[in-house]
Length: 409
Length: 221
Image (cartoon, rainbow over all chains, first blue to last red; front, side, top):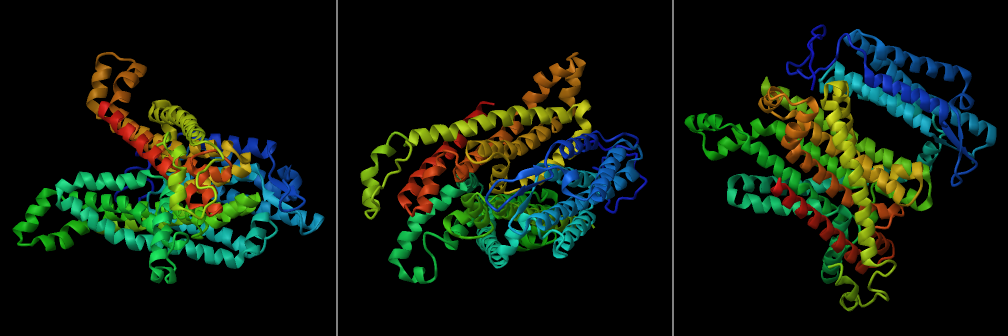
């Protein structure tokens, strides 16, 4: 990573910030590319697509004919502003300016889409559906990425990045709560399933939580065994790796047979709700998946204690147990939290597939939508799953940052 | 396994006596396997060329400005659930193998780009300076020194990507692609556990065999 140190103007809140890469005095070729893409998309592709009802496919409507001229002008001004900031040459201030303009572009685009939907609803009644078009997605993704990139240039501090994400996310939530977006087809799908959404989201969290409850203790134990018994290490990781190699849906499928046989023999299991289909096999499969990253994290973490530190601890009269709990584990904490993050993100994604075996979760909306060719229902499920995974990632990254600064302080 | 499974009807008939059709017959297992492998193969070809290309580009002086953002993008993208990426491709291009290939390429690129950047930036200064010292051009240095040294890490990234994509392609049958996942999905929706097991066994074996093949390849390198 390039680190030009023309950037001592701001004092980074963390001592460990060598990776800032604000090229002071240089223009930003990436941003030029993003703005070019946004401008081309806004001019040539549909901003929203309007369909007479939920199932029929819509016709693309360009930005300037979808919203009020004032909104179009504001959006154009913001995009031009982004373009200007791309060729500015003042390092830090340029990046701050970019971040603010990019955030405003993102929020304005979403507001504009909501307005477009309201105008359609006024003109053609409540059955008409307004979906988000390719130009919307490109503007939203482009400005979101410009924001993320500007933030990465400005600071490596996870807490600052969290606050910015929370502000932008909160503003979007506020927009949604105010009803400004409620005529969008995506919002209608949500409104039609408000209760189901809550319970499927909860179900998703239960699946991930249940799998973590199994994978964390068992995986940690296996990682500890791998650390203590070098002879078993290779075979252990080979088996865990094999489990990870088999596609998730195959594991789900292969568990159906044994579990339904088991519940047929033991009626007690059936009364507990454990059978071939449903949450139980999903949690078991997800637990199996979680074992490798947990075990590898624990092993790597424990093995990373420097020998000199171990010697010092022994010299102070620590026994093996004290060394483990008071030396190795505290030192391994950053690695442990990082592997926790990887596990949580992976399981959140895999739990989507669990809907195929009747375990519910956010995947249920995706597969329902695929079955009904209801694009916005697919979007509802997929975007929620992505948002959940990103939120988990960001939270645990912040935790890792907290642990790292705590450890080095 | 592929050769034997078509003759296994009696076994599955015995295991699941209540099923009228114990063996998946909508398409032959060979067709499913070939179609599955072709999807993953095509996507992997694009992923390897494009991923290594992008990785090389951002580690050269000309593309250095893009290194950080590409890294950020790869990190963010890898948190996206593969199934969500697959599902998002459907509104864009419709049902069939097209969304599957797009999702496989989009999702498979990230580990390859990440590994190529990691591999090329992890090379110690000494061999690079030696290459410059003996008068290799930048292209020569890249081809004869940097890429061979980075090869094991890049290969590990390609392996992750291919194995991941075998799994994602399996779910591709929910959007209409013909893969080894088809019997699984059909079995799940039609309550035919025999179909599920047949598909799951084959796709599991396919993934494990591919993984072992990469093992051999890594030994050779």
